[in-house]
Length: 326
Image (spheres, rainbow, N blue to C red):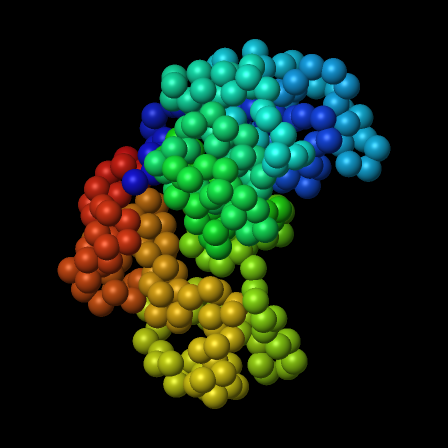
């Protein structure tokens, strides 16, 4: 289960974002926006962000941009988190000094986050051997072929392996960043960051990377209102037929379009929503287990505990002890 840093325990807030020649600016900007901006409530950034050059020489980005940074790989020596925002060439051999710096940082407990093709850099260190990881769906076969000892998850948004967090292409990097903020500072801080960036506050890591068939957006047929309703009231006890009726679709069409839009079934999607709501309540409230189970749609505390064990390999009590506000 991922480790977190409760507010009562200080942790290393130093976060270093790597830059390199031919920098992927979208992935880089994602990390800067998520981790470098002031928190609206605290009026300061949540992390002490610095930018480090992964290699010497002139650094350029797409669009003719040239980059000047404050330091090199020495900045990684005291970092609590390192972010690798993409990479310029999957086939290019990664410089030994960068691999050594990442390996040393990981050995002393530093977290490493990759966005999109940045996973290939981390894979080259050997730190992903025997672990689950993801990257952009277009590159997952190349990752699996080059590193057969990695359990590649081809269709998820991000994979959290504790001190290693890998994410898929472009916008899913933002989901991973928000997930990390949530781990470190709780759901309120992640929600504030999401509102500032005008993005959903928390998408499940197991959600599909891409939609195979776009959901029709003509009036009355979109799934968005129904999904918003279920998120707002996870204790809703709607049948498939009632959901399909609310979406103005037949049962068969509803199930097909729901899977196309979310990558899963209504039951599994709603279970994920309920677990996320339960986790938030365990983190932020002192409500009893029966009340949390009731408010989240599990009915009984026993059912809540069952799904926690099945999906999270933990118990609600252990989760509250580890992540809750003491």
